[in-house]
Image (tube, rainbow, N blue to C red):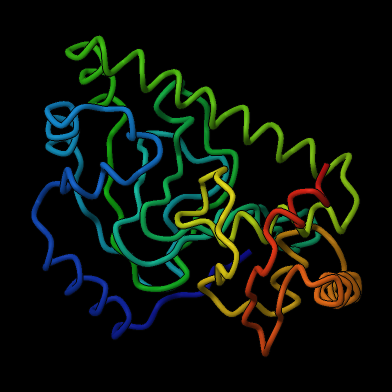
Length: 252
């Protein structure tokens, strides 16, 4: 499958955006990343020194399924989708991530290849942490190692739950989970968003269908049902969660 190439203007915008950041990560940015929430300020500073910003243009490939997993990424600005491509060429979107979101965490723990594709959906700046640098950081900061490994394990369990969802949950339950995930601040958080939370991107029903793993017709049906139940408001692609707790109840 041939991926779309970004225009020179788009690449230029992304590079100019990267030029506005320093040659390493900002500890304050990392403090708002769920994976690093339990680290102390000195630990965050040490980790930030190991991370380097890199600019990506719209639709630029970050990595593809099967590539060596050599680095971990935090989104400083922009948006990224994590996706798979079926044998017949159909794209299946697993996650959409915004600022503060992260991906590639499996690279921190093992030597396995990438399990999915990562592509920027708009000009983005990502903070890149090489696996070897991370392992050295763990060796030098024992207390941070314990906290980080525990947190990574939690996220891996959550990813396993998402895979189970695709197998065992019905379409409305999967749609409810996707809506809650999209409304979270970074796309990774498991915290329930507040009533009135708005999904940042306008979502076409076809895009939601790809995320949920359902047909567009089924998504249209259940969006209408959720709206009638007072769970959401759907207006020209803009989705507002009126009762997130009600969506959560729909999952279980």
